[in-house]
Amino acid sequence: MNVKLIFLDIDGTLTPPGSNIPPRSALDAIDAARANGHKVFLCSGRNIPMLKPLMNICTFDGAVGGAGGIVFVGDRVLYDCPMEREDFETAMKLLEQTHVFRTIESKEGTWCDEGMGAFLAGKNGGNSELIRLRRALEEDLGVRPLNEYPGCPVYKIVFTCESEEQLAPAKRALGEKYNFVVQEAFSLGCLNGEMINRKFDKGKGVRLVTEYLGCDLADTIGFGDSMNDLEMIETVGASVCMENGSPTLKAKSSLICPPVDRDGIATAFHQLNLI
Image 1 (cartoon, helix red, strand yellow):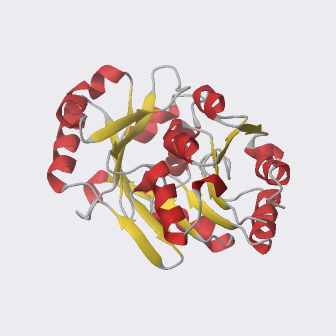
Image 2 (cartoon, rainbow, N blue to C red):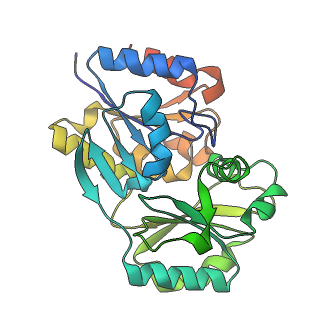
Image 3 (cartoon, one colour):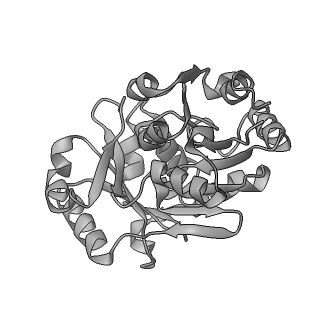
């Protein structure tokens, strides 16, 4: 049996959006797959502090965090790429000028603009990333006000606003260096996404792990649900999109599995003969 490298998005894939508790069936499936010799990695837009709750309740072989900005296998860091300070300051200034709500993520924590909680409170539905952000604010999951940001290196800026026009100045200034990933299925009057360095993405993170372990990309499997999973889905040997996921991602995936709250991970692990 070939060892498979399994890469799992978190919000909307491994857990309900904004939750740190996977279904019992998913935890059992991960343990069983690892017992069969396969390796399982988190592959998420979350920063290190937001990955830790999952890593405390289940054993993983490593992670692609911050949408690819930091990659590690066991205790070995393979990649670590924060934003250049000048780019960060330019982005923050331009997004503020067009009244875009900003959330910044580092290895030390997460900070956001005051007022964003009230903005999101009036928005119903949305994609898994928007729901995660709303829950993080509502349930006090360690997101602090932006005026408390201590100046540590930032890996990713999450943006929330009413229209794409508000992003135009930042895109003009930094679009060649940063990908403005807009999520699909946003709520009426609410657009959300992430500003991610073009030096990395989840797909490149998958490649780094695969090369480090001396494995073949044909033996990789990726699970996702939203547009920040696109590069991972396009890179892995077998791609799985959750039934609750983006229509674009579903069209590019080799398998559609039930949603997270209907034992989707466990079902797909069985279908792919991982357990």
